Length: 418
Image (cartoon, rainbow, N blue to C red; front, top):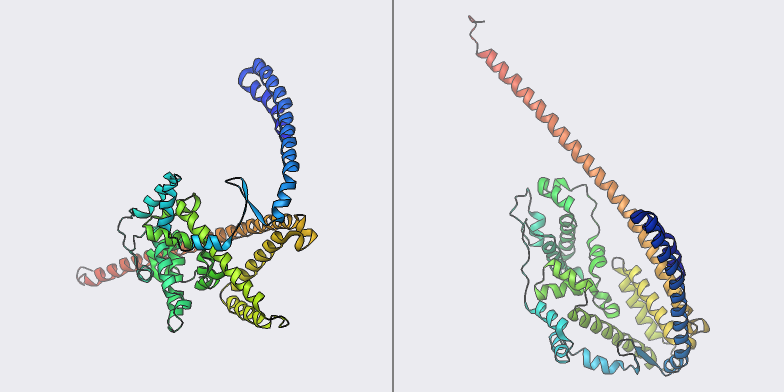
């Protein structure tokens, strides 16, 4: 409030002077002074009110939290959460049944829209027919050369899941097929590389570095091996829903960022299933005989961690999952874990970690952008060199053809004429 008031007091006279001269300056000054006084007072009043609410509600919040109750932000009530009850109610419910329930409960205009989107397939846009030098990459994905970006993405998701080595452990050729499909997608999903491939075939993209397909797929869609702990990642969930509903790419992306009832249901179901899986795993630890030092449980966890970390970027993903679970456990336990956790410092630490991660991601994106710019510039230079060489060769061939024609014409002239 104070900062906004000072800003208004400074800027309003300037704006008024530009628009109305001296008179405008006077009006702006009056408005600025009024805002400079009113906004800080309003900000202070709001702050005092919020602090008062916090002080008033804190005793009840501490007591309810001590009784293991949770706050429902929508209904604005404290309640006792029962995982078994929600799991029994939610995990056996289909998305269609959930949407019908939403409609019956009168929450359903958006639910009805979601159900309609799920039941009425959208027609996907198409591109004009095009001629390309080589169709190998298109054939690998099972699409036509005029496929849209959304169709390419969807085809890759279907093919990669079908050919993933984890799903074909007895097929020795599965790994090579999976790598080929990944390489095809990495080229065709990039508009610049796709244009080069269409013009020159594989020769036009042979110098392009291709990421390992297993790591590439996991980065985009996650890994089924980790579904037990994190469920199906939201992007993979969206692709599945999009294929089921016949959505085009625009509709699928819209569902990702909007409060689509079907996606809300799938996300909640994912969270509950992960909670059930975690509870069952912890129960194994609890059920081991006293004095066993939980050796059986530790051995099982170590073997599973070794298997998960063996996959592409599996070790990094496992570390992230472990960090999140540990942090959330400390937050829920509060004083039972430590004074530090009970006073809320775990949450402060989490926020600091999130900010640090965003900073690292921003730096990484900047570095990636610079690298991509350099690569794009290098590609343009190589393309220019290729065109110049081609033009020089054409000139040489034309000169050689003229010289040959002149030589033939010279040989054809009779000696008497010469």
